[in-house]
Image 1 (cartoon, rainbow, N blue to C red):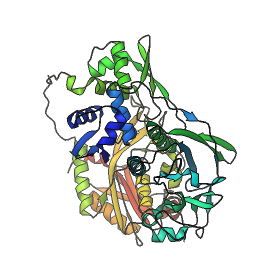
Image 2 (cartoon, one colour):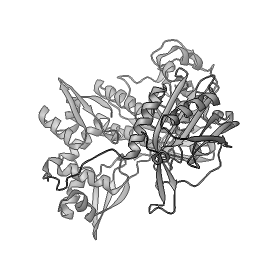
Image 3 (cartoon, rainbow, N blue to C red):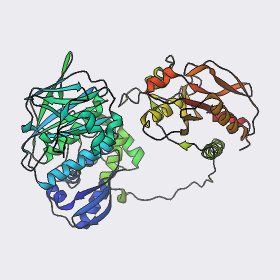
Length: 549
């Protein structure tokens, strides 16, 4: 969870009410973040990762105003019609963009500091260190249309932010601090750029030009974003523009002209979610009237209307964390005050112990660390492209997510190795050899189960370096299984993710429990991995049949 610094006087000014340090700390702690320290004019706050709308000082002030009853309900933002357009050409690495114009920006030291802080924290969190989303903020009056987002050659030039001399884009990657830090996000032959009639003014996701630097004289801003997920880009842009609006700025949308279609950004869209009153009582144990629930929701920045036994709740455009009615119930609890709940002692006594599968996992973890592998944890949510196409396999049935939020996460994983391959692709710049493993659940369709699915615990591990081979991964696999004291066989296997003739299956108790081998060059190419990879995946639950752990 990000720990961020805020200016106390600026926060109180934005809230519009004088408060003592103690009062301010109590209110911040009540609405979800946690105050770590107050020193002079600085407040150090640990924010919750699921509330990016509170990362900026303006969003935090908005939540405090609502909680105090100064300004309750859904905050409405006026979006002016676009006065400019951006032509977005096909840029394979970062295909999606978003933009907005901010008018009447009052460039005080506090406003500029807040702007820099929110930009950086959004890069690190929602932007996944600029890989998913990168933000550029410019002095709009120093940009001269027509504006185009395009792909340029590495020898194109601009004066980078903070520099005095022109550099080529290739030189920027090699000589500047930001270039060195983020050059792994740029393909050798492809350089994304925003260009106006005077040349390049932004080199995403690296840095802006000195020409469009934001200064104390800046009155109007252009916010531009690039990335790999359109939905995420709009979410980040929404946070930025609503923060500016909280400082009294006017927000103007921008037309994005893609090949064959035109879109307008940002999209400040409110959502409506139905909330059953019975669920509130069941989960919280509180006997609240509909009027009381509506008042509590308004205190947390929602609008709500009673329709029979249910509430129709309007969710603000910046609350992307609200995915289910239970999220609304959590906010009702926050508004009610956790300190107002009456504690009840548990009336059931139970003695806890490790599940047998956890004992196996614990031993497996110790073995892998002993073999020199490093543990990683990847999401159980993934998508079919990663599970099948990028692994050279035909698509199979999986447990899919009906109302997925991101195209990155549309189904449950069926096996673990694709996640480890993705991890390798993210870390090509790290020293080799790389030896990693993961122990985790996979979810398989199963019509015999009540939930139409079943979870299995597996381990996957791989080694990547210039001499990674079948023999090496076979040695690790045999050592791993031998330490569990089981009698197993290794037989031939054909698996399209692996090189033919350099892959084998593991048979235990007449059942295939895993496989290992050298990853196919075609699969490595799809993941853009340059080193050979040898990998293994084993079903750990099969070892429950022979408990020697």
